[in-house]
Image 1 (cartoon, rainbow, N blue to C red):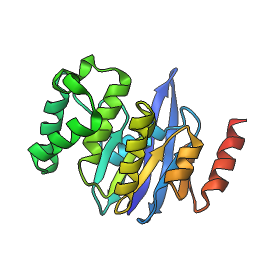
Image 2 (spheres, one colour; image 1 turned 60 degrees about the horizontal axis):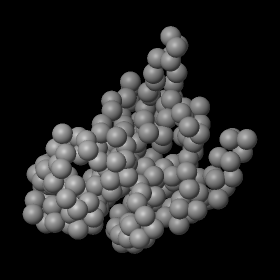
Image 3 (cartoon, rainbow, N blue to C red; image 1 turned 120 degrees about the vertical axis):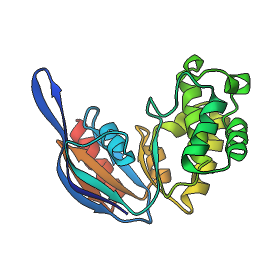
Length: 217
């Protein structure tokens, strides 16, 4: 369960304050994976960062009764000066999982070769995404926050990512941002639509997608 209690967040844009989350109060029950929809700039990444605890709201709070991943796919989820292996060992200690097991899992899954032992700042965007996805899937969370990551890499890697994600979703939930609507339909059963600072819940994923498409026209 995730509960938003009077959540508010805004930014200064050209000397004016823009609210991206406006006094949000909503409870999301467990047991389903949700697509997070909204036009570019609507505040999807901001909301994900607040849910993860990486960003403080201006007011209100987020309450959850389960463990939540970091926003997978967003910049800043790994330390650029550390190697992929060092990031794995660091996160294993932070989240209390076996260091050797997580490092071996990520090295095998991300398929970065020698780059796994090189600083992340030398990685391409795709390599960072593969590392971040491998790190997150190697740790069992109740709720995964996913931002476009399943589209990283070649076709074989995307297939492996999708298979592993399906496996994790058997016992966990997710909130997913993805411009590929077919992937949202594959992984998600309901949706959240963020527009003008307001977040609406839709039991019917297709209804939410149609409203989202209409708002883009």
